[in-house]
Length: 258
Image (cartoon, rainbow, N blue to C red; front, side):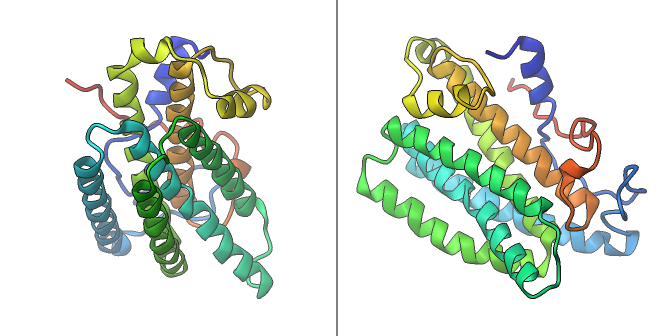
């Protein structure tokens, strides 16, 4: 189970707002994310992304106000989509000979694999028990996939920012849930899907359902940081191929609720 210091460091990794950069890139990057002349384009892209994200959040809030596990099932079904949408486009570029570096594909596959296990956990907790929830999640995921493919081909920066918005919402949702239900979650056992994924991979140790949700929340923080790094570097290179690129990104902060 993570220490309090590790939790605080993870919380410091996720931001409340989405600033764009007009300054020089971090050491080792190929180019700045945007120039001053492009700033209005970035503002427009981010405004559209935030509007779309907030619209979806309002719908989910209305439909799943008191049904947390069903909401998480829908959220995790949707959250997986961008990563294999990115992979689809990158595979197409590779097939056509336009791009032949596998590091982005590797990163996005790992993210998709992580989100897949989040989904398995929510299914084991009963989040998919109603057919209407399964239909809504898969219907939304179908259209989200093609929207993400089109967005990624048009502007990878915009697509990564949109995914960052989704991951930030996921982190915030899990964080609030953990704080509201801490004592209850600590009394419940961890799902088998979580034990098989986290313990067998030697990533984390935990004893109960509370620890499971802490790890899921922290996973979302890592996805958020990766999506931000992809925007920052402005090219098709894995952010993990740049030394300390994620560890030094401290611009993501979600303030504590009042």
